Length: 192
Ligand SMILES: [Fe+2]
Ligand SMILES: [Fe+2]
Image 1: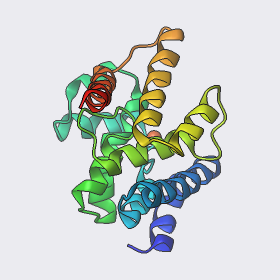
Image 2: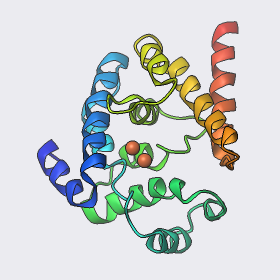
Image 3: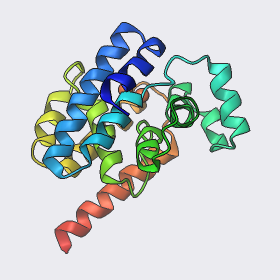
Image 4: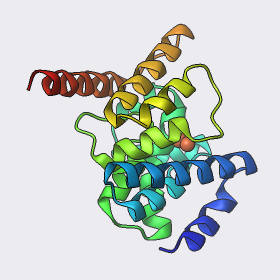
């Protein structure tokens, strides 16, 4: 799908602010793909659609999670997590995008997962560091992303977990599993 077509597809689904964020994620994902040898076109499309379901009614998202038999434990955690798997589903259903690598990058952009692919890492990180993001710690991750994708990703996941814990919010177990997996790979890299 052409960039303009994809952008026109998602725009009516997003607020102005979220659309600007989407453009930032797109630019960042493309530049990370260039830097780290990822698929630029897939990074572009995954980034454009990553928040496609962000503003769907909670009830609709909940129905999809139940009917499509997505991990049911999602329903016990913050609804903020739901738009990622639901977004992958709706991107396929409504936009006709069937590339599983793209759909997985959308599916796991909030929780991450153990064994993330390069494209999944790129979209996760681009979502975290795009130029519109302003929160404590983001600049450090931006600088790390210019040097080492995995280390930047570890930092982003750590920050996310600690942010939730400081606010006394639940942490979805898959995010801990992602963190543990990234640390394990990093340490294996140091020892190997
Ligand atoms: Fe998102
Ligand atoms: Fe996002």
